[in-house]
Length: 289
Image 1 (cartoon, rainbow, N blue to C red):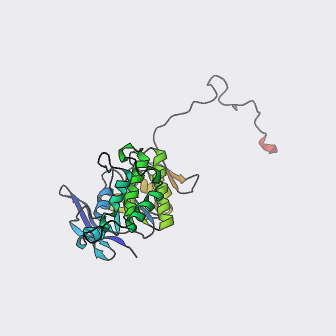
Image 2 (cartoon, rainbow, N blue to C red):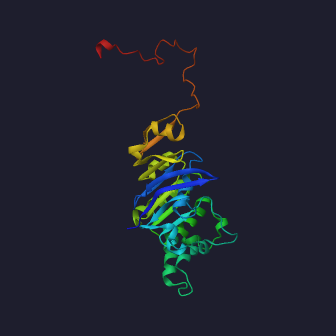
Image 3 (tube, rainbow, N blue to C red):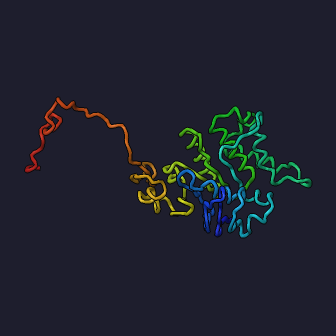
């Protein structure tokens, strides 16, 4: 069983602590999403759990061992991280990028093998990029490019995948494309996925487990339907809103308060007496209804 935990974690930025004594256990085999306002520390927490940032206090524990004591290749065989807005060298092909995911398995004693080739081809197939393998990464659309980076993480064949805002800068069509891909990877291959998302409604639709962060602490965590309500949105985002069921999936959907387009009445003010019905149909006699 592959486990990932934060124990008594203390993380600072510029000398000021963002998190102090934070505890978090990632549900295995589920999709977990971190939500919170800009600057609350979502990405900092994710990066620390991938060993990209060193905590000042506490520890990140991977499969029962302090991740700081593990070798880079050992960590990379168990956990893949896709940072926000990755860039590839000019001219690098999709195939070359995806092959980078096999780095943790290479050594002087173990060169490129049939197993590596099969892992790369499987990653390309899962992300529907087989036909684009010879295209350069910089020639792809935004959604295709993000799928290429995800394919690289899949080629690592890790049970844990961490992604920092994987839908940033993508239009809605490509956001859904990427999130559907991650959903399928979780459902079909039981990969544990942890990611940061800004869109609350998409987070509620795709997540099994949500972690809501504000001011360096976890304000709530659990299933979207159990924790997402207007009070939590006010606490975490300072956002007055209504929470209603998603009309397609029944998951919580946030409808913010605020100004919007006021649709003009279909009846002109001088066209009818405002005290009377606005149609020619007479009002029913309630005594006979």
